[in-house]
Length: 89
Image (cartoon, rainbow, N blue to C red; front, side, top):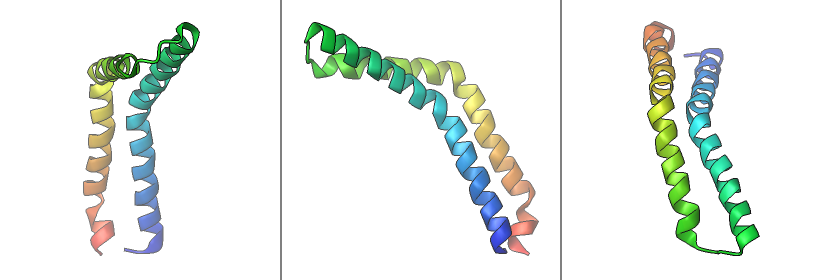
């Protein structure tokens, strides 16, 4: 395996990871900011108030976008295994 092929694989892997994780991270970010603003306005500093809505939002996003995320990951794995001869030889 030469350096060019390795860099292509690493770049594709990083792009796949970022795209697959983005919906979950964005949902947790949006809900976290909304709950933080709510806590700042009401001056309620309860930890479970910040934790539970984020968990629910992440579960909803996994339920809604899980198939798309899995398709991205399996597509990457298929491309990786399909070009196995480039990596071994």
